[in-house]
Structure formats: structure tokens, C-alpha cells
Image 1 (cartoon, one colour):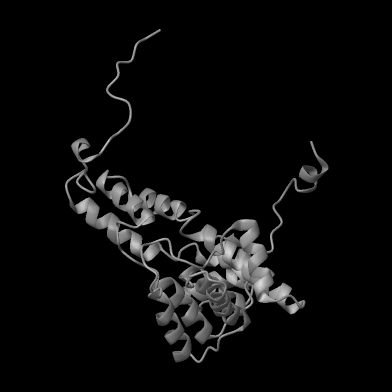
Image 2 (spheres, rainbow, N blue to C red):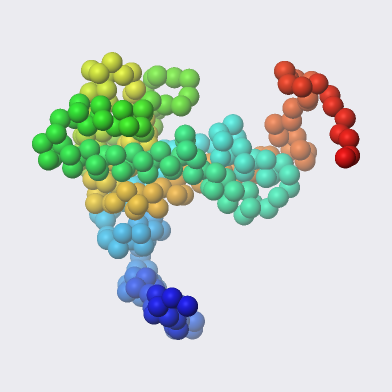
Length: 268
């Protein structure tokens, strides 16, 4: 057995919290039912991730980041999973959990958002060190062929409809644009000057705002995990109200198949 495992054998040591049934619950060193009893749920959620407290205005903007991307559209890849779970008469927990799991996709969802946060931090540090934004972008494009957070993987080059909404909410809460959000828009403009028509999308915005509040890329990722969830139960419910299997049915005759013809399996 390794020494590391021996070091951690025995009672679990934790800084995060513990439950003392019949007495109290501790959340990051605070009594949940006394010290934190008036805390908003999203404020508690961000406190659990970062260990820091935020102003009510900041919490309102963070909450809006979730609200403005809660689309109850079963055609979206993650909501489709929730809808199909309802159609198959699976449980709500399984349907929503599976939908959240597939939200961690490589084209949409949390992988691009984490990558966008990582790039914004790296780009900010390099520019602060004296490099030009153009040089940073050229190297990133040469290495990865794309800048995550720019361009939208749907058939539109129009403005991402969520961006004006969240910027207006920031203005309403008197939250000024910080260095990461300003950099995110600078990148969009520089890409256009470089001949790349890649408008900024919500992935860059949804991480730039928490980064400006002191979140790390990993903390941004954890904060965004529930961001699509409000749109999932409606898709599950509506599908469960239809006959079983009646969500996204498709006859084989509707498919244009160009592969091998019908074959018979032969047992060797």
C-alpha cells in the first residue's frame, strides 16, 4: 500500500463541512442553519465553489447567466436526452442527470466554456506580459485551428441573443465590464481584422463575467454545471405526457440509406 493512502487512512479530514445529525450542519466552517440561513441558494452554491462571498448585484448577474441560457427546446442535444427519457418512461432523476451529463459536450456546452476560460486567462497574462493580441491569436489558431467562444455552431452569424440580455442586466445592476470581458470583445474585433468572421458567442461571455469576479477557470466550470438545467424538466414532462415512444419517432423509410444492402448473418 502506498504511503499516500496510509496518510489518508482513518477519519476523513475535510475543510468543506460536515453534518452532525440532531445538532448542526457545517458548510465551509459556517453553521448552515445559523450563519448562512438567509443566504440565497446560488450565493451558497458559489460560496461552496469559491469560498468567497459576492455582492447581491454580482449574484443577480451570475443567476442571470443561468436564466438566459435555460431553453426548454427538446431539439437541443441535452434537452433531447431528457425528452427521450420521458418518452421511454424513465424517471425524472435519470432523465435530467443524463441530460446534464451530455451537456459536457466538445462542440457545445461546458468543454468549450472551460477552454474559453482557460484561453482568456492565458491571453490576458500574455498581453499583460507585452505580447500583442494579434500574435496571441495567430499562435492559438496555428496550434488549435479555432478560438473557442467565437463562432456559433448553428446556422447563423447573427449576434448571440443571450449576449445583449446579459449586458443589459449587468448595466441594470451597475456591474462594469472587467478586463476579461473587455478582452473577450477585443478578441472578436481582432479576429475580424484578421479576416476571421467569428462573432463572439455565449461561451466566451459566460466565463468572462465570472473570471472578472475572481473565479478560476475550474471554478467557472463548476459554477456553470447547472446552467442548462431549468430547460430540461419541461422537455421531460411534455414527452412523458405523450404516448410512450411518441417523441421524435422516425420511420426507416424516411431515411436515405446508401450503405450495403440487406445481408443475412451466417453463423460460422
